[in-house]
Length: 540
Image 1 (cartoon, rainbow, N blue to C red):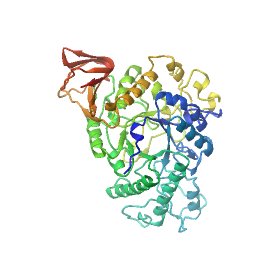
Image 2: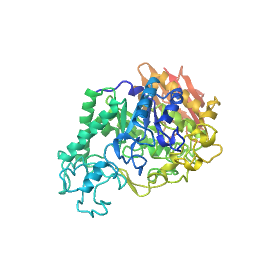
Image 3: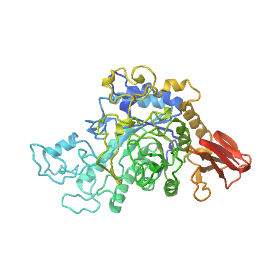
Image 4: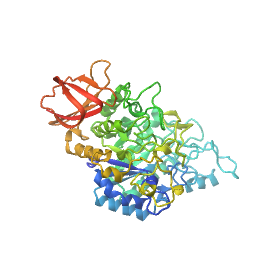
């Protein structure tokens, strides 16, 4: 399979479009607004943007309930605005990735409406109908069809790997064939308009029932077919998956997969501190990046190494700095002094970095933000993740904070018209303020991106090896990145305690490329790391 060379050097920036920049004063971000901020993204070091769903939708689930795959939602602009965005981004060396919901639609989609009006038609096969004899006066309701995530998002029919009921189609039935062909048609339509790739939502949710060995293999086969076609017709385009199981996703033909809060474990154990949208893993008292210094990173390490080994040379893994689905990195009680150590971790991992908008200035998770467009998780059954339900995703989706003007420069609308209210903290960080402060988090992130791009040992092609210390010692986290003749040692102490460790390797001639509170003590192999300290050391 072909691997577009640009992806391994990508620095991806996730934009929640309705919260990024409003250009027309209606209180909702839009595509022309993204164009206005491309120079800022370029200055940050971003070379790839990923936009959450921009297609026409009734927005019951913030755009993940698609009404028309071939039309830009009017709140964001028109198709011509997307074309202009691609042109402006490409002129700055920035690629544009869209979000594709492959496994379901809105109930308002014309396909669903047509089938609901005549559910016994031979052509009523795009969806999975459990009951076709519903009351025609009221239309189909929950339980009449199979859905994904929210009940009002009817699942597209890609068939059942092992049909058990009369209403379950095999994967080679007319409906599944129709949807597979449509999937390719959707991709081609946007590729022809300049789209550089897609991040696929719930990528493993196609063939039913989800999670069985047979359905996983059948879903993989669909994506492998798509990938083979892309390699021939669009070899420079990419597919990124929300599967959170890189060994499956890469085998299925995706170029890149995210390690998130489900399937491949570990992310939650590093960063979820008991507050915000999603809970920490069951039984965990402290995450690793917590001031108490009582966490461990063994679950993450084992899972990460396993996934790396399973995908090496075939695809990439990214660990995102934040996401629209869970709390931001700055989530109480994690404060400012703890952020930089976490950023060093993210920017020295082995896959392309992914940055959620506003994380680079330390925007916080705003507890108590009003629910908006399906943001509430309580009671939802997540794919392969069990029951989830804590806080609001809206607290992570508040408007981007550009400056100290009204609405933080996000919109000229009145405050009551904004998509979501701003962070009410009068000390909220802004891009403008941090641009003026050479010691700001924004400048620190810029420097990390430049450092990563300047050192092959910190890039995607380099190996990663975790250095375990004496039994029972979990702090600091230490790992070696190596590529050809270059080696870098990364030391991280995300705790409020001084940490001292003896390294099982020689630091003679080591040169600090980045250092905050890390120093040699006595022998060259002994290090003392201050609270929240970190270092990147060039070693021979």
